[in-house]
Amino acid sequence: MSQPSVARMYDFYLGGEHHTAADRAAGEQILRAVPNIREIARANRAFLGRAVRHLTAAGIRQFLDIGSGIPASGNVHEVAPGARVLYVDVDAEAVAYSNELLRGNDNALAVQADLAAPSDILGHPDYARLLDPDEPTALLFLSVLQFVPDEVAVPAVRTLREALPVGSYLALTHPVVPPDDARAAPIEAVYRQTNARATAPRTAGQLAALAGDYRPVEPGLTWVTHWRPAGDPGPADPVGMPMMAGVFRRDTTPAP
Ligand SMILES: C[S@@+](CC[C@H](N)C(=O)[O-])C[C@H]1O[C@@H](n2cnc3c(N)ncnc32)[C@H](O)[C@@H]1O
Image 1 (cartoon, helix red, strand yellow):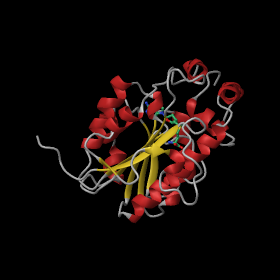
Image 2 (cartoon, rainbow, N blue to C red):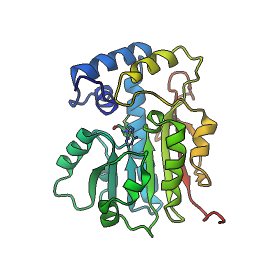
Image 3 (tube, helix red, strand yellow):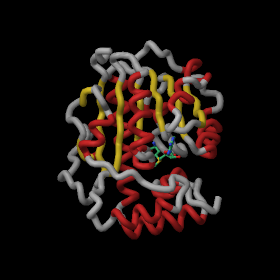
Image 4 (tube, helix red, strand yellow):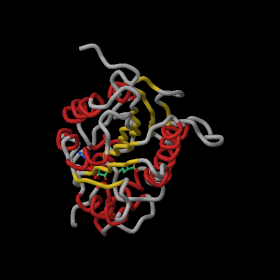
């Protein structure tokens, strides 16, 4: 508990109650470097809601939410009641709290697994119990891949993506802060002290590549507030809101 956890720091940004003094101290350091971090976190959650509603309208009935975190307002099963949702997080506390809230819900549960071992996710007994492997699924990577280096994230995302049938979707959000941005070094210094141990900065091109042959849904990979906004999203502002979001669809099975 003396080491800040990225799950609890995010809870702190969102105004939740599941964080310690160490998380608050680390979160305050981030607030000094990125004064609108709370707004960015809320924009990320708002995207979750819009993306899940879009996917539900497109006929998706099952979700695999990787790096689901400590439950906050507007979780996937709340936005898509009746859908089957498997939440996955490496953080035991986030998983335990999720399952506490999900008690009595037969359509959603959380399991502890590391994205680094996608076979642990696909081979988990609760995966087979909850999700039909032949039915299109939405794979969510919301604000998680920045904690996973390329050598792990690229093969892991590919394995999960390729396990899903045609008609499946992949949605992601990810900060995009260029290395020469004044915020980059302090962000890295703080996250080095957390259980994630580092961050994995990525460009828009690297994010699009993570979707592989899944094709972007309109408007493509864009700034998080600009993905199908409910109202006027304001100007596209990569400096103020350096978070990108996209939804991609699997249209075809790749040739062997
Ligand atoms: C910033 S929170 C995002 C929560 C939620 N997805 C959202 O966007 O609101 C990131 C979450 O990713 C989890 N995480 C980090 N690395 C992970 C890994 N290798 N495998 C699974 N989960 C991971 C953390 O424990 C944390 O709960």
